[in-house]
Image: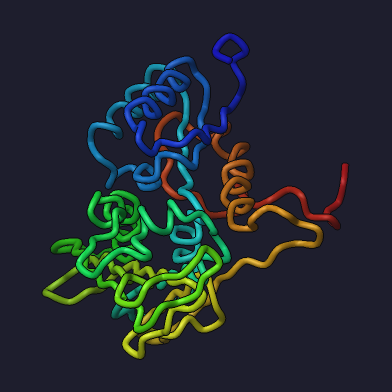
Length: 297
């Protein structure tokens, strides 16, 4: 690959459990003058808030190779970054901005017991801390989004705080992957919030349930099922629901297709951009070129 010197390399290998290796592999490509787009290095979606170690490594590699790096995020990634910018173009006074992500019916949508049980805590006893929270993955993957939206709004945050809770099954619940015993975890919620003066002003909130989880009254309703709801309090107030539908004959999970397409669409922009680390890219240069009715040369 290094000998072929492509204009751009799409790096989609996982960085989970191999972060050092992933960053070093990307840096090697950049040093050889190969531009890189990736979904893998999630904190780098907003380079100025990324860990200094990784930011400096990739910045140095871009300088050495005269290359450009762009990270879009992962499943669905740019919905948390590009969409807020578009929405805020028509905003006035902003009191708060919160993205509620609803991962519902996970036993149907993502039927892998090891993930649901070990990573997300379904079926674990009361008092168990889900691995995503205990490992720091929530802050690792989502803090960049909170800081990006705050910076877009010109808000200087005092801190970024995490709060979370689990739901316990009132009775044995039936799921596609087997029963969840009464008194064990059947859902959870976390919120990562940028705080100013003790009040959350920019936040990401995540809800995870299985198909038989009873919805608590204290949680905001999903309003249309799984997906994301962008909630803006201000003048005007706004609420935007974003969800995926499979296309005709499509077998792949549409959110995964969306994730991959976002870096493919960005390749021409990245190739033409000056060397360095790109922040979230919004505009015509990253729009799909596959419109069925588009004029053809």
